[in-house]
Image (tube, rainbow, N blue to C red; front, side):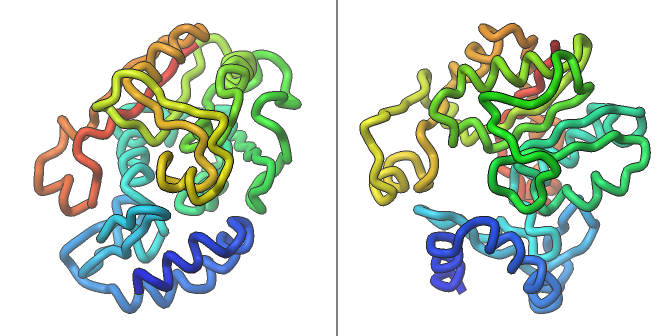
Length: 254
């Protein structure tokens, strides 16, 4: 199973992989059905989750039903328990919309929901994050998760995110982050995909963010709250939902 996943993850273009995944989800959900683990996004339970990872595969992390990972399930719980996302009339901009969320967010009639990306088949607006086609102060909420590590000029992208967010608006900008690392590491001379995968963890990543990520967001103008949601959950909940203990959610406000 792990070898099959690595084949798909590394060789098939992401837009094709997204389309294909809709076909296989029902089969995975049926095969892994059980009661040990729960996906909080849809409430379904399984005997095990699937492995996932480009360079270093992680066991028991990919939900068979929603195809959510640890970060998606953590974000879902955060949005439910710490924000008004599921109740207030909000204009939302969602970058690179995740399959686990896309149809569910689209069905929320109180949201004015716009998706954007350069390549995703789920994007309403094809756009470069460094040059967004939106007016200043356009959105109440911006979700931009696991995007910035792909962007060579992430400073310019952050300025664009700040520009289109309304005063008083908020967002979540998750990134792969090594909290043991004080400073972000990047090396633009590394262009080989194999080397990038070894060094950055994925072939299309261009940096590894450290603790200074939060300060960089603050330097753009955002107010940043570092939310360690797993501190509020029990060990039983963390294991049942297969969350990454200690993962910090970067909650930003303008």
